[in-house]
Image (cartoon, rainbow, N blue to C red; front, side, top):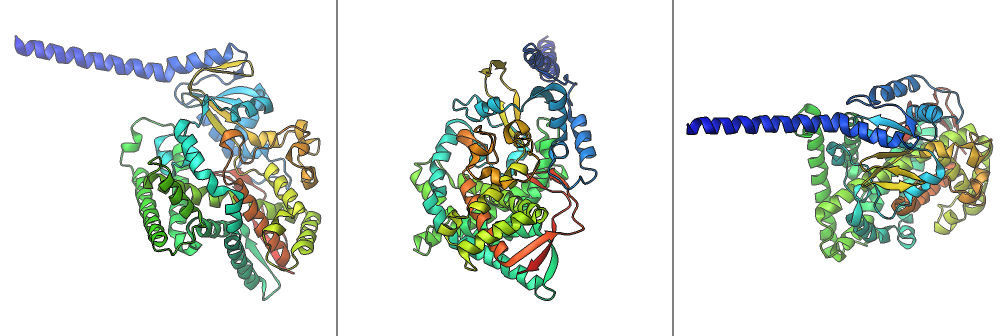
Length: 511
């Protein structure tokens, strides 16, 4: 009788557990998505209907496959190619519309005013979008944090990017750029010109800059970390674009094993770098003018708010953001100046007038107005990140809309940068002069320019990137003129950042 009672209890428990699991699955894949969709549609928001489990994943993949299957004409009407899915949705349903990634609704917000309100949020109603846990293997620096932890980390790190600190990094910028110029000069020395894919060249340059300024080393010393992080980006993007199945990260697939192995290797390499830096500081052998030294100082002053593991994650972020953003920015700049030789000449004349043949110093860089205009216009047309994302942590109201909790928000800044309403009928033309009186004047006294984000979470490294880009472009213009190779295929596409799909072959000519 006792055994029967135990068996009966186990059967009831198992049945209850099974029923609970089934109900949870039904809630997650059907009731909750349909409930969120109903709430949004009742407010007149249009878009695609929820499809069980997959959402719009297949339609999104088809749109990208078709758009990226062949190069485009040599112009700047890039939105339909770079963001075909969002572009189609906005064309069909308006600037506020719904799409789906798996079981989660994506609210596309392409309206400037609403976009600004989301980015300016200070009450943690719009937080960073939660990701597949495998994505966080790439980095968990300040960019991924939320709430009070983000606020504390941001306050700790901000002083490392103050202008007085960046000024001290100018010699490191100059050394990296001089090495690039010397390398290119050797390549063109025999014939006076040569064809060169500048995309990997600028990745090496940006890698060298971030290695010197962040860690006091060179690209060669940090090469292994860069290579591992580059591979991790590809693996993470695959996880990001796939439907997340809870617990999948624990399954020892070949790619999962590789993701975790890379993470361990990168952490070990960075831990060694940090240990050497700590020893150098203790022995008085470090000048404390690189970002790692400043980060370790932040750690000491943080009253246990920051651990060595946190320092490692910030270093991983330095390596990625410091390389990818500037490298692609410079790549697009040379492509566009090759398409616009008149502006290439104007920029070169300014550099020669202000710097001559000398390596630019900080005061020179600050006075390069034409160069600034060119770089801003390149950022408008080809921003490094084409869509910013947020997530509603709780039910919130914005612009008269009531948005439920657990809704992903997509802010397609690329569409805003190419909107004639703010930039004029010549929006698809390269016209740096639109920035002659600053950003707000360029977009008709309305801020519609978000290459580095906006609001409390704007990119801390934007001044770092601007100084690096101005230094590199000025020195290149001093020594070379350049034109597009006949093998160049205009194919902008967004992977991790906006980059040329088939490289950037340029013909370099020595001046």
